[in-house]
Each structure stands twice: as structure tokens, then as C-alpha cells.
Image 1 (tube, rainbow, N blue to C red):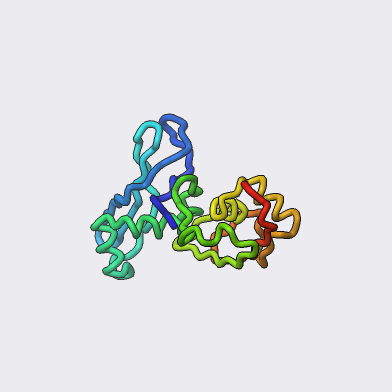
Image 2 (cartoon, helix red, strand yellow):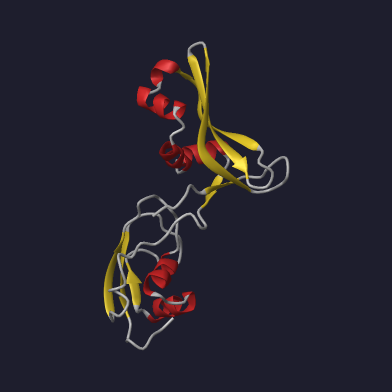
Length: 181
């Protein structure tokens, strides 16, 4: 689950930093019957503000009233939704940095001692994470131990566990009880 908005990866033209943070602030500008809207992001190095285009010269009538209301009220949830929009990312030439912006909720520690565990992972937001890292954190293992389980065939899934995943998946973990982190 997310703990904060992700950082925006883009080079700052003032200080050269490559990370910006969004705080949910928007700027909306109307010119006659057309509307522009931007999500404001601040450089983590120098606090310079950059505008990420959300709406570009669209007619006012084509914008849903609830979207316009959310923009005017600086809706932080809208900022999170828009940041994850791949069209917005491509249009503004940015990527997201989710490091430190999520946490794993395992629902307790009752699963830690099981020799065989069938696990379903559900994402509350499209956060790209490495499944092996989730297994390691969720079962109190080191990354190396989780990697060994994968190599041995004791960690299996229909989803490739070595890349990044941002959608729900399931896996089975089989361990002999002597395995530790």
C-alpha cells in the first residue's frame, strides 16, 4: 500500500537534481473557452516548481465538473491518480520513483512459520515492486535467501518473480523449516 506520493524523476534545469515531489497542488488557467491545468511538483534539491501538464487547451465544456472541482480543491488523491497515468508520464517525459513510498501489509505474523504458504498479493495502487523483495520482507528473509528459494524452485508463481510487477499476483513458498533469513 502507498505511504506517500511517489517522487517524480525528471532533471531540474536549475540545480540538476533528478527528483521532484508532488504535494497535490494544481494550477488551472482558463482562457476564454479553453482550459489548461497543471500538477505542480517541487524539486527536492532547490524547491524550484515545475508544471506537469494535465489538461492542454481543452474546451471547458469537455471537462467533467467533478474533475474540475477536484483540480480547484487541490485533491491529493487526484494527484496520485494522475501521477500513475502513463499518458501523463509520457506527455511530460517523467518517470516515477516509488522507493520508500510504499509498505507491505502482511496481515500479521501467522504465516512466518509455515512450511508451505499460498499467498495472494493485492495492490492498493499500481506500485511497481520486485516480487522477490515482497517475499523477503513478508517472510522475514534476506534478499539472498529469497533468491535461493526461487532458484531452488521452492518459490513458484505464474508471474515472473524476478522483474517488477504492479498488478495482483499469487505465489507459493515451500521451505523446509530450517531456512532462515
